Amino acid sequence: MFLCFSNYVIISTYHIQSPLICFDVQQYIKHNIQILLLLLLLSCYIVRLKMDHAADAFRTDLMTITRFVLNEQSKHPESRGDFSILLSHIVLGCKFVCAAVNKAGLAKLIGLAGETNVQGEEQKKLDVLSNEVFVKALVSSGRTSILVSEEDEEAIFVEPSKRGKYCVVFDPLDGSSNIDCGVSIGTIFGIYMLKDGGESHLEDVLQPGKNMLAAGYCMYGSSCTLVLSTGSGVNGFTLDPSLGEFILTHPDIKIPKKGKIYSVNEGNAKNWDGPTAKFVEKCKFPKDGSPAKSLRYIGSMVADVHRTLLYGGVFLYPADKKSPNGKLRVLYEVFPMSFLMEQAGGQSFTGKERALDLVPKKIHERSPIFLGSYDDVEEIKALYAAEEKA
Image (cartoon, rainbow, N blue to C red; front, side, top):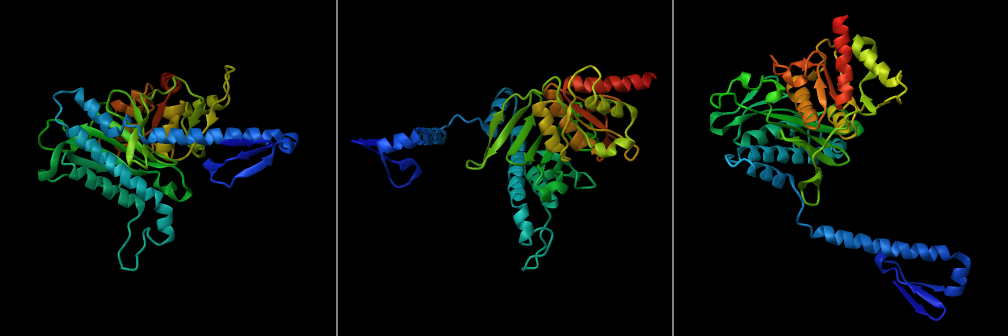
Protein backbone atom coordinates (compact mmCIF):
# COMPACT_ATOMS: atom_id res chain seq x y z
CA MET A 1 0.00 0.00 0.00
CA PHE A 2 1.31 3.50 -0.90
CA LEU A 3 0.38 6.80 0.79
CA CYS A 4 1.44 10.03 -0.94
CA PHE A 5 1.90 13.31 0.91
CA SER A 6 3.42 16.22 -1.08
CA ASN A 7 7.00 15.23 -1.94
CA TYR A 8 6.98 12.13 0.23
CA VAL A 9 5.80 8.61 -0.35
CA ILE A 10 5.17 6.39 2.64
CA ILE A 11 5.35 2.73 1.67
CA SER A 12 3.31 0.51 3.95
CA THR A 13 4.92 -2.91 4.11
CA TYR A 14 2.08 -4.38 6.10
CA HIS A 15 2.16 -7.62 4.09
CA ILE A 16 5.76 -8.31 4.98
CA GLN A 17 5.38 -6.95 8.51
CA SER A 18 8.20 -4.34 8.47
CA PRO A 19 8.15 -0.78 9.85
CA LEU A 20 6.90 2.04 7.59
CA ILE A 21 9.55 3.37 5.27
CA CYS A 22 9.55 7.07 4.32
CA PHE A 23 11.25 8.29 1.14
CA ASP A 24 11.90 11.72 -0.30
CA VAL A 25 10.26 11.32 -3.70
CA GLN A 26 12.58 13.53 -5.74
CA GLN A 27 15.75 12.07 -4.26
CA TYR A 28 14.43 8.54 -4.48
CA ILE A 29 13.35 8.76 -8.12
CA LYS A 30 16.62 10.45 -9.00
CA HIS A 31 18.77 7.70 -7.51
CA ASN A 32 16.89 4.45 -7.99
CA ILE A 33 13.38 4.29 -9.38
CA GLN A 34 13.74 0.54 -10.05
CA ILE A 35 13.59 -0.28 -6.35
CA LEU A 36 10.23 1.47 -6.05
CA LEU A 37 8.87 -0.61 -8.91
CA LEU A 38 10.25 -3.81 -7.39
CA LEU A 39 8.62 -3.01 -4.06
CA LEU A 40 5.32 -2.44 -5.82
CA LEU A 41 5.61 -5.78 -7.63
CA LEU A 42 6.60 -7.54 -4.40
CA SER A 43 3.60 -6.09 -2.59
CA CYS A 44 1.25 -7.24 -5.37
CA TYR A 45 2.87 -10.69 -5.39
CA ILE A 46 2.44 -11.15 -1.64
CA VAL A 47 -1.20 -10.07 -1.84
CA ARG A 48 -1.74 -12.58 -4.66
CA LEU A 49 -0.11 -15.37 -2.64
CA LYS A 50 -2.38 -14.60 0.31
CA MET A 51 -5.44 -14.63 -1.96
CA ASP A 52 -4.39 -17.97 -3.51
CA HIS A 53 -3.78 -19.47 -0.08
CA ALA A 54 -7.16 -18.29 1.13
CA ALA A 55 -8.82 -19.76 -1.96
CA ASP A 56 -7.07 -23.13 -1.46
CA ALA A 57 -8.14 -23.21 2.17
CA PHE A 58 -11.79 -23.29 1.14
CA ARG A 59 -11.53 -25.74 -1.75
CA THR A 60 -13.86 -28.67 -1.25
CA ASP A 61 -13.65 -30.19 -4.73
CA LEU A 62 -10.36 -32.03 -4.14
CA MET A 63 -10.32 -35.54 -5.56
CA THR A 64 -8.98 -37.62 -2.69
CA ILE A 65 -8.00 -41.24 -3.20
CA THR A 66 -10.97 -42.31 -1.05
CA ARG A 67 -13.37 -40.34 -3.23
CA PHE A 68 -11.68 -41.67 -6.36
CA VAL A 69 -12.00 -45.31 -5.25
CA LEU A 70 -15.66 -44.81 -4.28
CA ASN A 71 -16.35 -43.25 -7.69
CA GLU A 72 -14.80 -46.30 -9.34
CA GLN A 73 -16.86 -48.57 -7.10
CA SER A 74 -20.08 -46.82 -8.15
CA LYS A 75 -19.42 -47.96 -11.74
CA HIS A 76 -19.97 -51.54 -10.56
CA PRO A 77 -23.46 -51.78 -9.01
CA GLU A 78 -22.83 -55.37 -7.93
CA SER A 79 -19.87 -54.28 -5.78
CA ARG A 80 -20.18 -54.70 -2.02
CA GLY A 81 -17.26 -52.39 -1.18
CA ASP A 82 -14.79 -55.11 -0.16
CA PHE A 83 -12.18 -53.97 -2.67
CA SER A 84 -12.54 -50.33 -1.57
CA ILE A 85 -12.04 -51.33 2.07
CA LEU A 86 -8.91 -53.30 1.16
CA LEU A 87 -7.45 -50.33 -0.74
CA SER A 88 -8.20 -47.99 2.18
CA HIS A 89 -6.14 -50.24 4.47
CA ILE A 90 -3.25 -50.25 1.99
CA VAL A 91 -3.42 -46.44 1.89
CA LEU A 92 -3.35 -46.34 5.70
CA GLY A 93 -0.23 -48.52 5.71
CA CYS A 94 1.44 -46.17 3.22
CA LYS A 95 0.71 -43.15 5.42
CA PHE A 96 2.16 -44.89 8.45
CA VAL A 97 5.34 -45.95 6.63
CA CYS A 98 5.71 -42.44 5.16
CA ALA A 99 5.69 -40.96 8.66
CA ALA A 100 8.23 -43.55 9.85
CA VAL A 101 10.53 -42.92 6.87
CA ASN A 102 10.47 -39.16 7.49
CA LYS A 103 11.67 -39.76 11.05
CA ALA A 104 14.20 -42.47 10.22
CA GLY A 105 17.28 -40.25 10.25
CA LEU A 106 16.32 -38.61 13.52
CA ALA A 107 15.41 -41.97 15.05
CA LYS A 108 18.85 -43.29 14.25
CA LEU A 109 20.52 -40.29 15.86
CA ILE A 110 18.66 -40.77 19.14
CA GLY A 111 19.02 -44.53 19.27
CA LEU A 112 15.71 -45.71 17.89
CA ALA A 113 16.83 -47.85 14.97
CA GLY A 114 17.74 -51.46 15.67
CA GLU A 115 19.05 -50.71 19.16
CA THR A 116 17.71 -51.05 22.70
CA ASN A 117 16.21 -48.02 24.41
CA VAL A 118 16.48 -47.08 28.10
CA GLN A 119 13.43 -49.18 29.00
CA GLY A 120 15.17 -52.24 27.59
CA GLU A 121 12.76 -52.44 24.63
CA GLU A 122 14.21 -53.53 21.32
CA GLN A 123 13.49 -51.06 18.53
CA LYS A 124 12.68 -52.45 15.11
CA LYS A 125 14.47 -51.46 11.93
CA LEU A 126 12.43 -49.62 9.34
CA ASP A 127 12.03 -52.48 6.85
CA VAL A 128 10.87 -54.86 9.58
CA LEU A 129 8.54 -52.21 11.00
CA SER A 130 7.10 -51.52 7.53
CA ASN A 131 6.42 -55.22 7.00
CA GLU A 132 4.57 -55.52 10.31
CA VAL A 133 2.53 -52.40 9.54
CA PHE A 134 1.31 -53.75 6.21
CA VAL A 135 0.66 -57.28 7.48
CA LYS A 136 -1.47 -55.94 10.35
CA ALA A 137 -3.26 -53.43 8.13
CA LEU A 138 -4.11 -56.08 5.54
CA VAL A 139 -5.20 -58.73 8.03
CA SER A 140 -7.34 -56.24 9.99
CA SER A 141 -9.16 -55.27 6.80
CA GLY A 142 -10.93 -58.63 6.94
CA ARG A 143 -10.70 -58.85 3.15
CA THR A 144 -7.49 -60.82 2.61
CA SER A 145 -6.79 -64.54 2.55
CA ILE A 146 -3.10 -64.89 1.59
CA LEU A 147 -0.26 -62.38 1.96
CA VAL A 148 3.15 -62.68 0.31
CA SER A 149 5.83 -60.27 1.55
CA GLU A 150 9.43 -59.80 0.47
CA GLU A 151 10.35 -59.89 4.18
CA ASP A 152 8.78 -63.30 4.94
CA GLU A 153 10.08 -66.62 3.66
CA GLU A 154 6.65 -68.24 3.67
CA ALA A 155 3.25 -66.96 2.57
CA ILE A 156 0.95 -65.80 5.37
CA PHE A 157 -2.46 -67.48 5.48
CA VAL A 158 -4.98 -65.32 7.31
CA GLU A 159 -6.97 -67.03 10.05
CA PRO A 160 -10.49 -68.08 8.94
CA SER A 161 -12.33 -65.56 11.14
CA LYS A 162 -10.60 -62.62 9.38
CA ARG A 163 -10.35 -64.17 5.94
CA GLY A 164 -11.56 -62.50 2.73
CA LYS A 165 -11.38 -63.22 -0.98
CA TYR A 166 -8.24 -61.27 -1.95
CA CYS A 167 -4.53 -62.14 -2.05
CA VAL A 168 -1.99 -59.33 -1.69
CA VAL A 169 1.67 -59.53 -2.73
CA PHE A 170 3.94 -56.70 -1.61
CA ASP A 171 7.43 -55.40 -0.96
CA PRO A 172 6.92 -53.25 2.17
CA LEU A 173 10.04 -51.13 1.68
CA ASP A 174 11.78 -51.50 -1.67
CA GLY A 175 15.23 -49.88 -1.76
CA SER A 176 15.55 -49.76 2.04
CA SER A 177 19.36 -49.93 1.77
CA ASN A 178 19.18 -46.37 0.41
CA ILE A 179 17.52 -44.87 3.50
CA ASP A 180 20.74 -43.51 5.01
CA CYS A 181 21.61 -41.49 1.91
CA GLY A 182 18.15 -39.96 1.51
CA VAL A 183 17.25 -41.61 -1.81
CA SER A 184 13.57 -42.15 -2.59
CA ILE A 185 12.28 -45.58 -1.53
CA GLY A 186 8.83 -47.12 -1.71
CA THR A 187 6.22 -49.81 -1.21
CA ILE A 188 5.08 -52.00 -4.13
CA PHE A 189 1.88 -54.06 -4.08
CA GLY A 190 -0.37 -56.19 -6.26
CA ILE A 191 -3.82 -57.67 -5.63
CA TYR A 192 -5.28 -60.99 -6.84
CA MET A 193 -8.61 -62.66 -6.18
CA LEU A 194 -8.86 -66.25 -4.94
CA LYS A 195 -9.28 -68.60 -7.89
CA ASP A 196 -12.38 -70.45 -6.69
CA GLY A 197 -13.54 -68.05 -3.99
CA GLY A 198 -13.44 -70.78 -1.38
CA GLU A 199 -10.52 -72.36 0.48
CA SER A 200 -7.21 -70.56 -0.03
CA HIS A 201 -4.18 -72.35 -1.47
CA LEU A 202 -0.67 -71.20 -2.40
CA GLU A 203 -1.62 -71.57 -6.08
CA ASP A 204 -3.94 -68.58 -5.61
CA VAL A 205 -0.91 -66.26 -5.60
CA LEU A 206 1.11 -68.23 -8.16
CA GLN A 207 -0.92 -66.73 -10.98
CA PRO A 208 0.33 -64.83 -14.04
CA GLY A 209 0.49 -61.07 -13.64
CA LYS A 210 -2.25 -60.55 -16.22
CA ASN A 211 -4.72 -61.92 -13.62
CA MET A 212 -4.01 -59.08 -11.20
CA LEU A 213 -6.99 -56.92 -10.24
CA ALA A 214 -4.90 -53.93 -9.19
CA ALA A 215 -1.32 -52.86 -8.60
CA GLY A 216 0.52 -49.82 -7.38
CA TYR A 217 3.40 -48.33 -5.48
CA CYS A 218 3.90 -45.60 -2.93
CA MET A 219 7.11 -43.58 -3.21
CA TYR A 220 8.54 -41.87 -0.15
CA GLY A 221 10.72 -39.01 -1.33
CA SER A 222 10.52 -35.21 -1.52
CA SER A 223 6.78 -35.86 -1.49
CA CYS A 224 4.79 -39.02 -0.81
CA THR A 225 3.29 -40.21 -4.10
CA LEU A 226 0.94 -43.16 -4.56
CA VAL A 227 0.47 -44.50 -8.09
CA LEU A 228 -2.45 -46.89 -8.58
CA SER A 229 -4.16 -48.86 -11.33
CA THR A 230 -7.32 -50.90 -10.87
CA GLY A 231 -7.24 -52.09 -14.48
CA SER A 232 -8.59 -48.97 -16.19
CA GLY A 233 -5.63 -46.61 -16.51
CA VAL A 234 -3.05 -45.27 -14.08
CA ASN A 235 -3.53 -42.39 -11.64
CA GLY A 236 -1.11 -40.69 -9.26
CA PHE A 237 -1.93 -39.20 -5.87
CA THR A 238 0.23 -36.99 -3.65
CA LEU A 239 -0.09 -36.91 0.14
CA ASP A 240 -1.11 -33.49 1.47
CA PRO A 241 0.37 -33.46 5.00
CA SER A 242 -1.97 -30.68 6.14
CA LEU A 243 -5.03 -32.78 5.27
CA GLY A 244 -3.57 -36.24 5.81
CA GLU A 245 -5.12 -37.23 2.47
CA PHE A 246 -3.79 -38.41 -0.88
CA ILE A 247 -4.94 -35.92 -3.54
CA LEU A 248 -5.21 -36.76 -7.26
CA THR A 249 -2.33 -34.86 -8.89
CA HIS A 250 -1.49 -37.04 -11.90
CA PRO A 251 -4.73 -38.17 -13.55
CA ASP A 252 -4.66 -40.77 -16.34
CA ILE A 253 -0.87 -41.15 -16.62
CA LYS A 254 0.33 -42.09 -20.10
CA ILE A 255 3.96 -42.97 -20.75
CA PRO A 256 5.49 -41.36 -23.88
CA LYS A 257 5.68 -43.83 -26.78
CA LYS A 258 9.45 -43.35 -27.00
CA GLY A 259 11.77 -41.91 -24.37
CA LYS A 260 15.14 -40.21 -24.10
CA ILE A 261 16.31 -42.03 -20.96
CA TYR A 262 17.55 -45.53 -20.23
CA SER A 263 17.98 -46.82 -16.69
CA VAL A 264 20.31 -49.74 -15.91
CA ASN A 265 23.15 -50.67 -13.58
CA GLU A 266 26.08 -50.49 -16.00
CA GLY A 267 28.37 -51.94 -13.34
CA ASN A 268 27.10 -55.33 -14.51
CA ALA A 269 27.86 -54.67 -18.20
CA LYS A 270 30.65 -57.25 -18.47
CA ASN A 271 28.16 -59.98 -17.52
CA TRP A 272 25.32 -59.02 -19.88
CA ASP A 273 24.04 -61.11 -22.76
CA GLY A 274 24.33 -59.96 -26.39
CA PRO A 275 20.93 -58.24 -26.89
CA THR A 276 21.23 -56.19 -23.69
CA ALA A 277 24.75 -55.07 -24.55
CA LYS A 278 23.68 -54.13 -28.09
CA PHE A 279 20.70 -52.13 -26.85
CA VAL A 280 22.75 -50.12 -24.34
CA GLU A 281 25.41 -49.53 -27.00
CA LYS A 282 22.69 -48.24 -29.32
CA CYS A 283 21.40 -45.94 -26.57
CA LYS A 284 24.84 -44.40 -26.15
CA PHE A 285 26.02 -44.43 -29.76
CA PRO A 286 23.00 -44.42 -32.11
CA LYS A 287 23.91 -45.06 -35.76
CA ASP A 288 20.75 -43.55 -37.27
CA GLY A 289 21.68 -39.94 -36.47
CA SER A 290 19.27 -39.66 -33.54
CA PRO A 291 20.51 -38.12 -30.27
CA ALA A 292 21.97 -40.45 -27.65
CA LYS A 293 19.79 -41.39 -24.68
CA SER A 294 20.66 -40.15 -21.19
CA LEU A 295 21.55 -42.65 -18.47
CA ARG A 296 19.64 -42.21 -15.21
CA TYR A 297 19.96 -44.90 -12.54
CA ILE A 298 18.99 -44.41 -8.90
CA GLY A 299 19.15 -47.99 -7.67
CA SER A 300 15.71 -47.88 -6.10
CA MET A 301 13.18 -49.61 -8.37
CA VAL A 302 10.25 -47.45 -7.29
CA ALA A 303 12.12 -44.22 -8.03
CA ASP A 304 13.53 -45.46 -11.36
CA VAL A 305 10.17 -46.79 -12.57
CA HIS A 306 8.35 -43.64 -11.42
CA ARG A 307 10.66 -41.46 -13.50
CA THR A 308 10.31 -43.83 -16.47
CA LEU A 309 6.52 -43.75 -16.19
CA LEU A 310 6.38 -39.93 -16.21
CA TYR A 311 9.21 -39.09 -18.64
CA GLY A 312 9.37 -42.16 -20.84
CA GLY A 313 12.32 -44.35 -21.68
CA VAL A 314 13.18 -47.83 -20.47
CA PHE A 315 14.12 -49.48 -17.19
CA LEU A 316 16.04 -52.72 -17.46
CA TYR A 317 17.40 -55.26 -15.00
CA PRO A 318 18.53 -58.08 -17.28
CA ALA A 319 19.78 -61.56 -16.52
CA ASP A 320 23.56 -61.85 -16.48
CA LYS A 321 26.29 -64.36 -15.68
CA LYS A 322 26.02 -63.64 -11.94
CA SER A 323 22.19 -63.78 -11.89
CA PRO A 324 21.07 -65.99 -14.81
CA ASN A 325 17.45 -65.82 -13.64
CA GLY A 326 17.52 -62.08 -13.07
CA LYS A 327 17.46 -60.33 -9.71
CA LEU A 328 14.04 -58.73 -9.28
CA ARG A 329 11.24 -60.79 -7.73
CA VAL A 330 8.35 -61.72 -9.99
CA LEU A 331 5.32 -61.49 -7.70
CA TYR A 332 5.85 -58.21 -5.89
CA GLU A 333 8.27 -56.29 -8.14
CA VAL A 334 8.07 -57.42 -11.77
CA PHE A 335 4.30 -58.04 -11.94
CA PRO A 336 2.98 -54.86 -10.26
CA MET A 337 5.36 -52.58 -12.19
CA SER A 338 4.62 -54.35 -15.48
CA PHE A 339 0.88 -54.07 -14.81
CA LEU A 340 1.20 -50.31 -14.26
CA MET A 341 3.43 -49.86 -17.30
CA GLU A 342 1.01 -51.66 -19.63
CA GLN A 343 -1.96 -49.75 -18.21
CA ALA A 344 -0.08 -46.51 -19.00
CA GLY A 345 0.52 -47.55 -22.61
CA GLY A 346 3.99 -49.07 -22.27
CA GLN A 347 5.34 -52.62 -22.44
CA SER A 348 7.17 -55.12 -20.26
CA PHE A 349 9.33 -58.02 -21.42
CA THR A 350 11.44 -60.69 -19.71
CA GLY A 351 13.78 -61.40 -22.61
CA LYS A 352 11.62 -64.39 -23.59
CA GLU A 353 7.99 -63.35 -23.20
CA ARG A 354 5.57 -60.67 -22.08
CA ALA A 355 6.24 -60.24 -18.36
CA LEU A 356 2.57 -60.51 -17.34
CA ASP A 357 2.26 -63.91 -19.08
CA LEU A 358 4.91 -65.44 -16.84
CA VAL A 359 3.57 -68.13 -14.47
CA PRO A 360 5.64 -68.19 -11.26
CA LYS A 361 6.40 -71.51 -9.59
CA LYS A 362 7.69 -70.10 -6.28
CA ILE A 363 6.63 -67.04 -4.29
CA HIS A 364 10.12 -65.50 -4.33
CA GLU A 365 10.95 -66.41 -7.92
CA ARG A 366 13.13 -63.96 -9.84
CA SER A 367 13.07 -62.77 -13.44
CA PRO A 368 14.87 -60.42 -15.82
CA ILE A 369 12.77 -57.37 -16.75
CA PHE A 370 12.69 -54.69 -19.45
CA LEU A 371 9.85 -52.20 -19.09
CA GLY A 372 9.00 -48.72 -20.29
CA SER A 373 7.99 -46.86 -23.44
CA TYR A 374 6.35 -49.03 -26.11
CA ASP A 375 8.86 -48.32 -28.90
CA ASP A 376 11.92 -48.72 -26.67
CA VAL A 377 10.82 -52.14 -25.40
CA GLU A 378 9.93 -53.09 -28.99
CA GLU A 379 13.59 -52.49 -29.92
CA ILE A 380 14.74 -54.81 -27.15
CA LYS A 381 12.27 -57.50 -28.27
CA ALA A 382 13.61 -57.24 -31.81
CA LEU A 383 17.20 -57.74 -30.62
CA TYR A 384 16.25 -60.88 -28.69
CA ALA A 385 14.25 -62.20 -31.66
CA ALA A 386 17.25 -61.65 -33.97
CA GLU A 387 19.56 -63.54 -31.60
CA GLU A 388 17.12 -66.43 -31.40
CA LYS A 389 17.08 -66.75 -35.19
CA ALA A 390 20.88 -66.58 -35.50
